[in-house]
Every structure is written in C-alpha cells, then in structure tokens.
Image 1 (cartoon, one colour):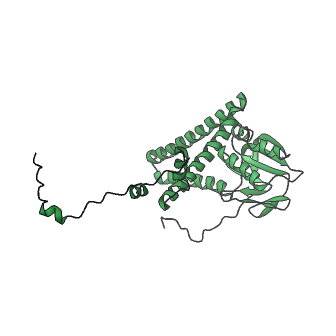
Image 2 (tube, helix red, strand yellow; image 1 turned 180 degrees about the vertical axis):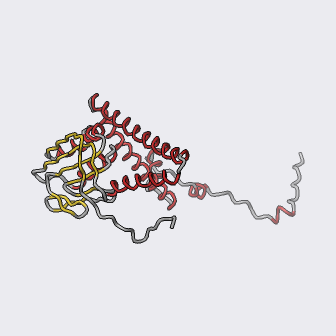
Length: 277
C-alpha cells in the first residue's frame, strides 16, 4: 500500500513565526485574587470608609446640617409654647381669647374712626375748618404719645416690690411691651414718661429708664382700658408670673382716673423736615 505523499508546506506559513502558547502563570497574575477571608460586608465598608468627599458635597452637607438644626430649634420653641397653653387652666385660656378679641376690636374701632374722619372731610361744607379741627385733635393725640403733654383717663397702677433686687431691666421692658400691646396710651414709671424711644438698662441695684435711675418699688401708671390692661399682665407665663418667680411682689389696681403728668421736652429734629415744605 502506497503511503500518502506529504503536501509541500505553503510559502506563507513558512514565513510566519511559530505559535507560542500563553503561559498560565501570566494570566493568573493579571487577575487580582480576592483576599482570603474577606467578606462582602468588609469589602463594602472598605469602599465607603474613609469617605472621599468633594468640596461641593462638603458645602451641601454643611448647609443641610444648618437647615436641620434650625428646623429642630423652631419645632422645640413651638412645642414649648404649645405645652404652656396645653397646661393652662380653662379660665386662663378664656382670658387669652378675650384679650385677642379685645385687640381685634380695638383695631376695628381705629379703622372705623379713620373712615369717619375721611367722611367728615368729604361731606363738610367748610373742609378747611374741619381739617384744622382734625389737625388740632391729631396734634393733641401725638403730644400724648410723644410725652410732651399731660394726660388723664381710666387705667391701672402696677406696683412691683423687689426687696431682693432680682428684677432686671428686661423684665420691666417686657411689662411695658405687654401694656402697649394691650392698648396702653400713656405710661409713666417712677416719674419718667415712657415714649416710643424709651430704653431700659440695669444700673447697680436699680434700673435706669432713658438714663434716669429709678429704684424699687417700681410704680407703673398706665392709661388705657382697665379691662384689657389687667388681664394682659396676668396671662399664664406673663409679666406677673415672671416677676413673682423672681420673688417680687406685684399688685395691680384698676382706677377710673389715672394721671400721667411726667413730661418730655419737645425735641426739634436735626435733619428731618416736612415733605410739604
């Protein structure tokens, strides 16, 4: 039997280099081997820590923290106010509602008075005379508010005895603000007229009002509606309770006639002028 003849090797194959099989050791070296005993949880922790934050991410994190802190403080303050009202007695809540109704009624009365003045000006035959009359009345009212004229009318007298000297200026200022909110039209404290620009600060064992030192007992003479002024001082957590916590004694008396006669000199403004000039 004849043996098959060997085919001649192709010319191109003779020119190609011989194929070299890849070494298995090189392939295995290219692929990293997982560490022995390293679980998926540990790999996750290593990927997250230490954190790699960019500058923008850090700024956003700080802003979010500040926003969250502000919301927490607001919620806490609202919770304190709600808890104070929640723990109040029924008669105290009724008193607070009555005070809010009284404030609303005062605003309505003021609105009605202004509308009446406008109608009188429009319907008066002598509008110039009516305007002068209203101007004089307005000047008198502004003089009372500015403390340049004396005033009298119904109101209250509040006396604060502070034998231990624990009452501070900010507590008396809170009393003035509460009285103003309740409709006080004129206030005098120990012979010092209280006006819009009045300031109080602590001065030794007493308090200074607009630079005038006063000592206890602190006597407030207030002109206004007594039915509004007294409840405003006695609301839960209000002026009276705050002063009594400082071991001060507070007495409030209503009166049909309160005289506020401490005066302030009329001050001419240095720069402000009427726009009509």
